[in-house]
Length: 164
Image 1 (cartoon, helix red, strand yellow):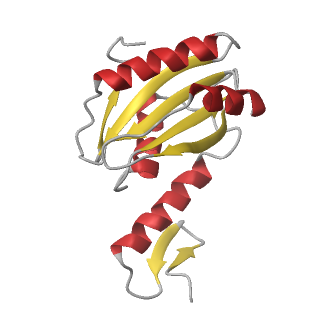
Image 2: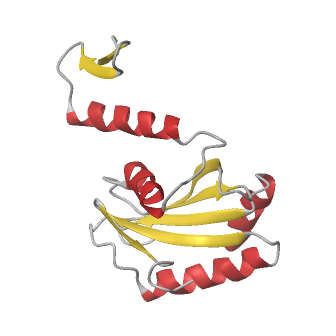
Image 3: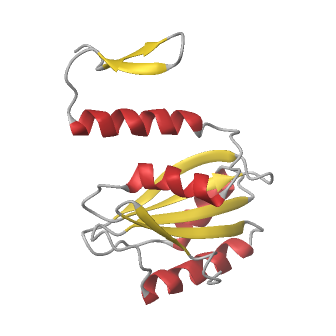
C-alpha cells in the first residue's frame, strides 16, 4: 500500500497522496511525534512532556501505564508502555518498573497513564501507586519527576499539584 503522506522537501509540509482516514492520521501523527522524542532529546518544558504523552495515550480503550525514562540531564532514553489493563484499571508491578529503569540506566522517570473515561482526575489508587513507585525507585537513586494522568486531550500532573 502506498504511504498516505508525501513531504514537500522545500517547506516540510505534508500533502496526502490519497484520502486519509482519521486512524491513519492519528497513527502518522504518533510516528512524527515519536521521531521528535528519540534518544537524547531534552524535554524543555512540562507542556512538551504532556503533549508527547497525550499523543501516545489518547484514544486507547483500555488503561496503559507507561514510563518516560530519562538520563541525568532529563534527555529521553526511552518511552515504554509497561502495563496494559482494562477499561477502568491496570495492575502495575513496582519490581518491573525498577528493573526497567536499571536496565535502561535511567536517572529519572516520568510516569504516565490514561483514563479511558476521558477524565484525567487521579484516583486515590493512582496517588498510592505513585508513592509506592517513588519509594521503590528512591532505593536505586532514580528520581520521579512527575506522574501525568491523561484523559482524552487533558492531563493532570501530580507534580504540579504537589503530590510528589
